[in-house]
Length: 517
Image (cartoon, rainbow, N blue to C red):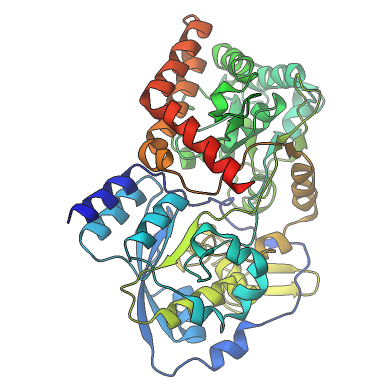
């Protein structure tokens, strides 16, 4: 019992993050989709007896249990999935409750290597080695890096993860608003401020009211909306927060100690105090923040370009005609527009519980999800029901009414499970329109900032990691919105971070990073 309590305590201290891809799907899209279909043969050789497995899914959509996508998964794998849904904010407590009750779902994910390793050490994760041999999609997509995952370094396979790397961010700018206020695409921090000011105070929507916001932003769920500006100061960030920073003496520490962090705060503070960024950025839920963009109240939005210019286009937007966007490269004191380098990510980590009565069936489902066919089902639904190919070789398609409406689409399971286990090249990426594909290339080219990527678990992360991440978020919000002495408050914030486990975190993080090298 003490062992279980220690495990639960550790899990409560670890952030569990499920990557959020850009929401929604458009009515048509352009890109290339190769015709491979590895899952059909495998599905046909699956057992005739249907197995029921439980799975924990994170997301804001909770379609009926008999939705068409789940039925199709069952038809392809002979596995009926019993889904438990949890929002991003509730998933940690939900999983901890399941652990305490000894009712772990058969398939679930964690957002931390430390969490996954704790589960493994306590015998709560299934050994999948023998089943992976019959999982061609997993083998082809993850290949040699499958055994690089810290959980898999003992010669056995316990953990799976996305083969796809995360989207980098773009500063999405409304070009129709630029035209209305007579301005050009911003290229640096000064011109970005001027554009945001005009978007806020020069009536870009032409309704005669002072009801628009230059920069939309929310930090409640992710840090995505702050990545481009932080990057212009040479500070890498991700959806989870600030990337670690390495001091000149080799110490790995919080990104708050980046030599340019305070300057970046002063710029955000300038935007906030001028009223040109969303004043509710610290408290507004992500979906409500998206809504301000969809409803024509926001002119600039730092996010994965696949959202604003592809997946949300045109169905999510209420304006007629729909807004138009392009992407700004914002140069800062470093003289370049940049973001953190992208490395293979072992989180979110997908696990099968040791209490799962049929791990072979669980792997069969996961292999299907990682296949091209399975990923297409997750993203677009069933051909002939939810969508039709316009030109499959070219990757163009059209959603079928009533599923051309994203709400109806999701209610039947489309896109709800798309983040769970991704191949290198997802259907979403294959079917992006040309503008979004160029935006992805543009964002990827900006991923040039080195940072100490730690994938090895360490004690201080388990003990203090969640609290320290919370401190970073609180400090970020406080320093931006405060009217006090920002330099004094910054020093106090660093002292707080160090006093609440930060110094131990630095010691353990530095050792973990050195051990990887």
